[in-house]
Length: 123
Image (spheres, one colour):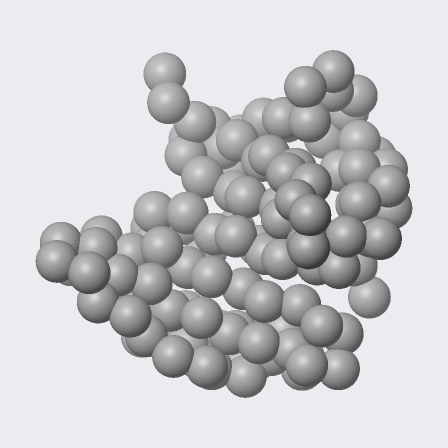
């Protein structure tokens, strides 16, 4: 499955994220938490679908962005799905509103994987 819609956990606390990922995203298992001074991240892996979820956290443990990594060959399918969900884009960035916030979704193609990054849009 190649779902890009279920990624927005922005502003949730890491404890709630751990619970919700287990309930909402079948196949993902908690891998580790890394602390780096005033920031940290929690990582979940889905070895069956070869996907990784990384939740970037602030010093208080609240999510500031989400990166979901897929195999590189999924790039075109993800691009199509994002365009279907959010409209056409020339620069592989989309925006949408939810709960009075504006979010940015970015599709990034790397050498080894494709990443969909979701974060609050900077005004």
